[in-house]
Image (tube, rainbow, N blue to C red; front, side, top):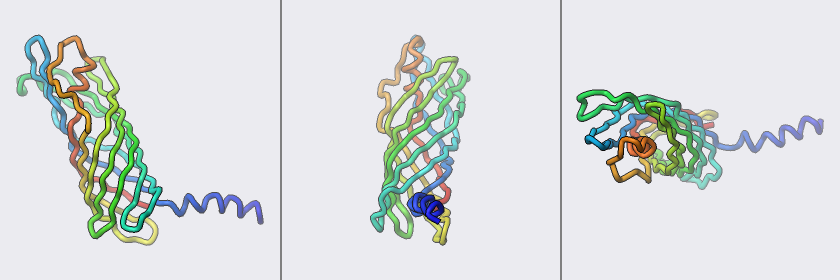
Length: 195
């Protein structure tokens, strides 16, 4: 009997915690760059992306939850247009993983605000670089009341807190060019379950 109780006692705290698993379907908007000599105006095209997120609520303050999160977006490629769409100059690849923290305020419509640290991998023409930067995100949504599993959905907006301000790059400096072209905004829907 003691052998059976010990595993139950060890697992019980895990069952009592608040977990969240969700998918974020967002429209991703990119920055543009001017490449010298030329200048060539490079503009990645907006792209729809899907990211998976896992959350773990570590503190429940009644009307608010404090949650730790992990997120991953698989690689997507978007066309890079040159000089206002006159031609295409290949593709820009983008993927990321991140960790963060979020406050979710419970009301009729739930409101959340948080910050992620994302490690973004950018690639084009055989060149690649990693761009680590913080992102702020806010969301508004609704969670359906249910006894065990609570489905939820909402609208989410995320933006990086760090961007490269100089939009001019010399042709040979591919790493800077990739960072300049990195995403500047995500707007989309987020849904999943809490248990």
